[in-house]
Image 1 (cartoon, helix red, strand yellow):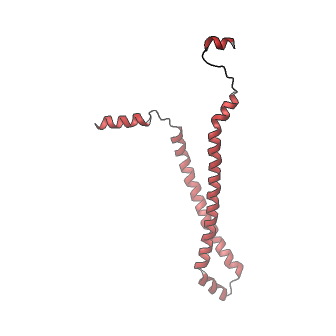
Image 2 (cartoon, rainbow, N blue to C red; image 1 turned 90 degrees about the vertical axis):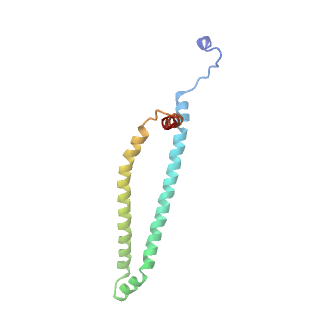
Image 3 (tube, one colour; image 1 turned 180 degrees about the vertical axis):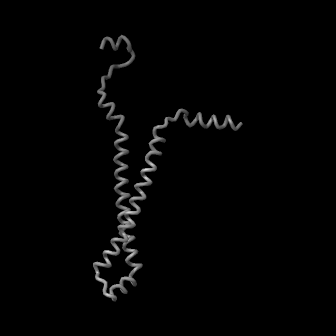
Length: 133
């Protein structure tokens, strides 16, 4: 304590744990991560409702086809299987395309995230006006 007072007489010595500082620094990131998780859950829930709506819409659109197939002797499970296969094929195609787009976008985002901005917005703006004057 005496050494502290010798070098910094105007400041009060306040000891802190490194773990407390780190926890405080990462609190915002933890909250952001939690919020992203909630939004992801909501997005998945909305997409499930969308798939349900798509299946219902398709069944409603094909009411006449279903009636004709039933009149020709198609079993109920064959008709249900057809709709499930159509819906699953669409879902699988959408999932694969979304996965591939994600694979392409993630490296680009990582490159942008790792780049360090060496100029502030103010200096960028002032440089822009200097060049155009």
